[in-house]
Image (cartoon, rainbow, N blue to C red; front, side, top):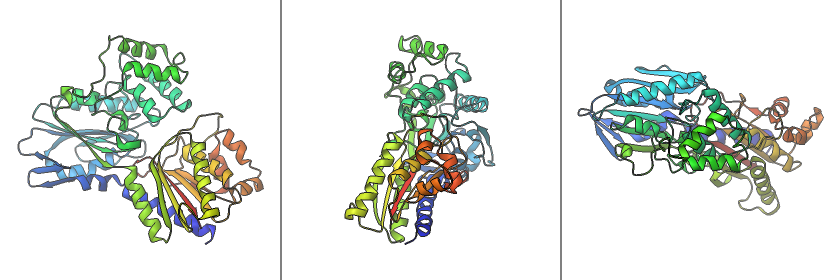
Length: 442
């Protein structure tokens, strides 16, 4: 089995995972209508007895998710607004699509968040607010709290990303600097009924974490946010106004985010319609069809990217040496979302960094290939979804005058793989269920 055929198989396996995470199909699997009855999961809504139906959303996939909603609910929808990343918009009837910045929020995102909050507040007790939430929704719905400016909130996010904080910690802080996150949207919509359809991009599919939980109870507090900043060593580096807001909240001068048991959640239904686990299952099925012995390590993989890469490389060595945990030809799959602690000023993303770190550890191994990519088609602040490497990658880099280790230390994987022709470009997939990693051993 040649490296070229391994590469073709890895791409086919990855694409199978992407197709399974298609946001429109994910919504269709959970939302259907018979007459005037709208079924969402195990819940039923009588469209004949409801007042107005409004559709709002935030996240890279929210416009795509709105397509089947409008197909099913159609004439009952009176208005709506969704905010997506630049380049992820779609034409929608009755629903205004706004494009905004991600991963750092911008003023377009602020306008989108205000439009969403206005529609939520306009909903009365007989109305239904359908909320479409997907990965990227947190950055795409900035609604700064307490007079905080967008630039100040951007700086907090930048510092958290820079120090390698996991998404759970980033969201805990952002919830307490926002009027929409951490149950804020549910609070704005109360007492309307709320149906939130969630395309999960977080470990464990916790509704309070997906896009910072705009319709879910928030288990974290202002005090938790302050402790995260202290532990990460950035409490004194964030903008003074942001620190003032968090300290005021911890002192009780700003209301806490709504907690479990709060009345604002009485009419709220959070329904997860798609996840990383579903994408991994589809990728595994395709790998088996291609003749591979398969093993899904986990959809819960997180931690420092380089360390996770070393574990995957160690599994490849185990397969080559002892034929375990599965015999050759082997396909090892994993999902989740790792973090990168920035050490240099290079260009790349967590998936490219993963592949570059793995390339160093599988150097010289025969018939071994690794692929890692974001299911949203974007890896970090680059136009690539990820990258591919094999046992010859490091040597091919040397032949071009490129030092793989130096590029890794500078967090500069993008130009390394671009020179080798090993970047993976998919374009916007309009979905987001974290990352998929494919390790093949021929």
